[in-house]
Every structure is written in C-alpha cells, then in structure tokens.
Amino acid sequence: MKALVYNGPCDVQIKNVPDATIEKPTDVLVRITTTNICGSDLHMYEGRTSMETGRILGHENMGEVIAVGKAVDRVKVGDMVCLPFNIGCGFCESCERGLTGFCLTCNPGSAGAAYGFAGMGPYSGGQAELLRVPYGDFNCLVLPKDAQEKENDYVMLSDIFPTGYHATELAQMKPGDSVAIYGAGPVGLMAAMSAFLKGASRVFVVDPNKDRLALAEKMGAIGINDIEGDGAAQIKELTDGQGADCGCECVGYQCCDKHGKEVPNLTMNNLVEAVKPTGGIGVVGVFLPEDPGAKDELAKEGKLAFDYGKLWFKGQRIGNGQANVKAYNRSLAKLIHAGRAKPSQIISHELSLDEAPHAYKKFDERADGWTKVILKPGQ
Ligand SMILES: NC(=O)c1ccc[n+]([C@@H]2O[C@H](COP(=O)([O-])OP(=O)(O)OC[C@H]3O[C@@H](n4cnc5c(N)ncnc54)[C@H](O)[C@@H]3O)[C@@H](O)[C@H]2O)c1
Ligand SMILES: [Zn+2]
Ligand SMILES: [Zn+2]
Image (cartoon, rainbow, N blue to C red; front, top):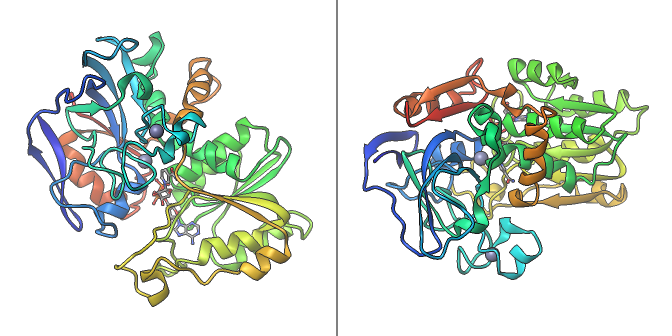
C-alpha cells in the first residue's frame, strides 16, 4: 500500500510499504477514505519529538471497514467508521472511566496510545491506503447513512472537534461564560465552535495569523491579533477589567512571540493573566516531558517559568492532556447529523495522498490560507 512515511526532520515521503492487515482477532481493517494533517503531526515533522524514522504518520482517520477479525461482532464489513486518534482497550481502569486518552493496556508502561504518534505506542498511522484498528468493536464509531455526504465533517470527530470540545470541558466552561482561546489553528477554531455550541456569551481568539483569525470571526468570535501581553490586556478591557470567565490553551510548547521566536511559557502565562480570578484553564496544546530541540535550558527538560504565584493568588484551576475522544464523538456526531455543527468549515485544502509532502511543508509554514488539510488516499 501507499503511505506517508517520516524520514527525519522536515522530510516525509510517499512510499510503498507492506499492507496493513488483521493481526489479532479483535482487529478491524479499514480502507482509508479521508485522513487529516494535524498540528500534532507538525511537532513530529519538525523533529521535535522522539518519533522514529520509517513510521507512518496520521491519527485523524476515517474510512470503510473491509475486514474484521474473528472476535469482532459489532462492526461489519462495509461500515463507514471514524476512528478516535486514541487507541483504547475498553476494559482497563482508565477506559472504564471514559478516559480513553490514558488507556493502560495499549501502550504498556505509559498511559495513552495513538496511531502514528511519538511516545504513544508502535501503531502505524492512517495517512495511507489501509489502517489496522486494534480493539475494533470498542474503537470504531460507526457512522449513519449520511457518512459519505458529510464525510469532511465526520472525519473531524477523529480528533480536533472532540479536542476543541475537551478544551472547554477542561476549562469547566458553562453556558453564558466568556472564553479566551489562545491559538486559532484547527484546534483553537474547534474550541471556539464548541464554546458557541455550549452557549458561550463571548469568545475571544488570540493568534497572530490573520486568515485564521478571520475564520474565528466568521464563527462569531472576537479576533485578537496581539499574542504578547497586550492580547490579555485587551481581553481584560473587554471584560470590565476582570478577564474572561475561562480560557483554553490550543497552541502548545512551540508557541511563539510576535517575532516568531519560540517562548514556551508565553501562552500559559498569558492565560493566567487573561482569565478572571477562580476561572478554569483547559490546556489541550501539547507540552512534553522533555524537548531536547528547545532553545532554552528549562524547556529542554520540559519545564516552564510559569506564573504559579499569580495562578494561585487568583484561585484558578488548570486541566490538561490528550482529549478522550470517545467520551464525546458519539454526541458530537449527532450534532453533525442534525446539521447543528459543521466542523468542515475550517478545511482549506482537500488533496490526494501523493500531495501530502507538499501539504506538510505549507501547513508547517502556517502559509497564508493553509488552515486544515485533508487527504483522500483513494483519489
Ligand atoms: N490534547 C489533544 O488531544 C490534542 C489533539 C490535537 C492537537 N493537539 C495540539 O493542539 C495544538 C494546536 O494544534 P493545531 O492543529 O491547531 O496546530 P497549529 O500549529 O496549526 O495551530 C497553532 C496556532 O497557534 C498560533 N500561535 C503560535 N504562537 C502563539 C501565541 N503565542 N499566542 C497565540 N497563538 C499562537 C499559530 O499562529 C497557529 O495558528 C498542538 O500543540 C497540537 O499538538 C492536542
Ligand atoms: Zn490531530
Ligand atoms: Zn484501556
């Protein structure tokens, strides 16, 4: 089969590799019809993770079931399915509690497994023609009859729609709240969309990227283009000096100042400033236990100079981590089915798998107009 393989920093290629197959009786084999490029792929693409060369990338996958293992009895050949980026077993202590982003079975010695992801187990990604899905009965979200018609919406259930929603949950956002979101990439935009679905009164989105801010504004958000201290000052000014009721971090450890220089503590400290006393902060942007490629010494060890005193004094709370996609994907699918949510609105490019290396380059540059890339391996 054809697949997108990681060769080393800023080097991905389409290669012919052995077909994915059923390896265990609980597996499902999927022919990928849509697979997305994610901001998480960019951390790996840039060589800023422990990703091994030769691995197939891609964790935002959807497609048609073409084979099922002997122990699979719910999912059927022909079903259109969307796969959560996290791989869960369904029976460990975390999965039982709905915390499938922290499955204790699928990546032994750690908590959390995913397709084509650094530090999250040996599983191949889905930027390929075929994907092996472990524990298929548990992990496949079987889609309704409009699966193909709304494919570009449903594929967003694999990661960014539930992840954006998770950011608002971690922030303990309630109807009527104002929300400060740092980052207008795909995840920040999905957090803004989720905040509106949940009844936010006002949503502020902070990003230096004008075309992405324009998308946020189209959703009804207030775009704020100053990513350094002034962004927080503007949010405070617009909220009677108090700050937003809650906030979401949707950028991660590679956040930058206005000159494009990485300053890893910038978004976290700005959120402490931009959110009101006692407000919640949900952090879905990725931060890593170590980052050898970082420029400053603290960041190399995965540490931040964090305004903890200010956070404590303001009585704020923080929630962190990978989204437990399965906790939300079924309900969010109903919103798509009913026409109440249209996450495909942020897609800028729909390309073939062969065009993926070029797309990685442009998306990594955050080039004008490259907001979200989806790939169609069958075309
Ligand atoms: N927790 C999860 O489950 C989960 C799932 C998916 C993605 N992620 C992570 O979410 C983060 C965002 O993903 P994405 O796909 O939207 O990526 P992206 O890189 O496309 O978007 C990041 C955005 O942040 C902006 N930005 C940079 N510095 C900033 C600053 N100081 N202040 C405000 N904005 C700033 C950039 O201009 C860009 O638009 C990544 O770290 C990704 O790995 C986490
Ligand atoms: Zn993703
Ligand atoms: Zn589990």
